[in-house]
Image 1 (spheres, rainbow, N blue to C red):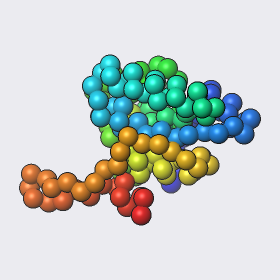
Image 2 (cartoon, rainbow, N blue to C red):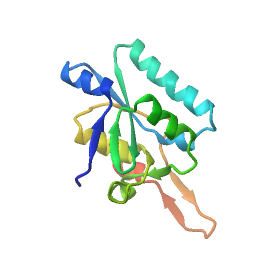
Image 3 (spheres, rainbow, N blue to C red):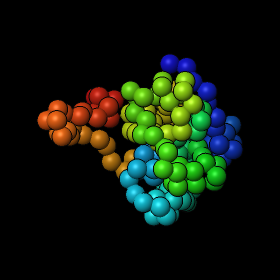
Amino acid sequence: MSFKLKYSKEVESARRKLKPVLALESTIIAHGMPFPQNLDFALEAESTCKSQGVTPATVAIIDGTVCVGLEKEELDLISRSKDIKKVSMRELGLATSLGWSGATTVSSTMHIAKRTNIEVFATGGIGGVHRGVDQSFDISQDLAALS
């Protein structure tokens, strides 16, 4: 799968200097908490990384471009917009080809991290198996990706 890729200034600098980078999924920001708690959480998570000498690389998709590390205005968009889609591995191709803006789940963050040589990522939690209203099961792509 090929996609347009953009690194934040901080992540690009860390990569050039061979400093540690930690991928962070963005679904917890866009869909896990209300604004402004979600933005406060994201800023605190990134600050915690930096205090430990690690460059945070929050992963999201902005207008079809995979962003590894978010600039302030991109993080603000992900935390405030009601139009941010939830993008797992299953939707990654659609998101990039159709120009979506989306928050990445564990499965898509893991895939993007691997493609960009980031070996470690952190998450607020993984998806599981959910019984739908129609009694079907929704099995998260996170489980397949982790397996």
